[in-house]
Length: 412
Image (tube, rainbow, N blue to C red):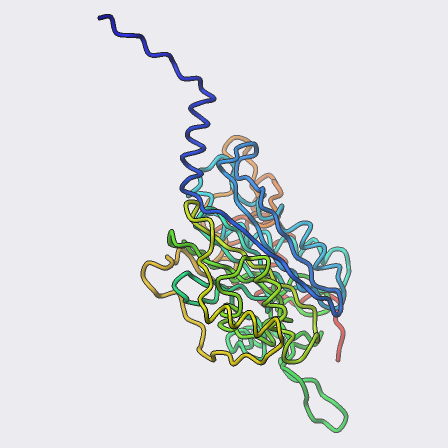
């Protein structure tokens, strides 16, 4: 019997099969958001339709971010509107997913610094914290300046911090860095010589050591983020991203415990409710809850009886006795894999050693602002293992205490 000739499969069908196969290995991302405003300076960004390769849905990733402004809203709005584009512009084009993820921490540093430079050029004095989360498959990358926080709650019940708080009161390393760069760290002086309140950096009086904006303080308040990149196990996990209006009133463990087993939209509302129970609304409170769930099991586990009782106590306003256990580090085998972590404020440690010379055009590209310039000795001297344009070298030297800040200052 004559064997029937196999019909060729259309290219579109093959591509569709590959996309479906790849998507089966990707988790589902579900999210919820809740907020209550006191001053109206919190902003957030949710973007679930990003693509590493435009037009190719198999390269999709999601971005979630919180911007907690102070001394006005302009810095928070500017960062919300520009930071993502600045980060993506710092990632080389035409690279695969693994190379893209490896380049992301450097691009986040460049994007944060570029956003800060551009905002300062506007001459406005507001500032903002930023907690910026990129989710690509099972890989989570978090970049942060300030005291907004991101925590991870795994299916195994382990709560882990993915950010570092840059509060001068609590962060000894940051206090030492600021004073070594020429800043003064002290509390507010009141009549009679006594000191009150948290530790602040002078001039400016900011309680934070890292932020975007804040033109009225010294360059030792830097926009260089702490970056942490992890890979979740196939069990997935939950991220809780929130401004300090939440974390000043609720511990990381209590926030996670208060909403376990609940869908993300309800979970975000309960975290905000939990924060308000003790002292009411004292600050802007913004919370994003993001669930990263296996595609074959797109439903969170059912609540236990204990959790149902907890939900009832929250709804009916009864006091809930919370656990006081400390937040765990990411150390449990099989829960997460740590891929990268760096918090140095030295750009030479953060921007890599790759050449920024385009072999085709012969132009040098600044590692921060991505501006192309022809190579010359005057441009490349003292820029480190990477190329920086003249204005970015000035910014780099000022942040590292090598030059006095040209910013206007406001004394206390």
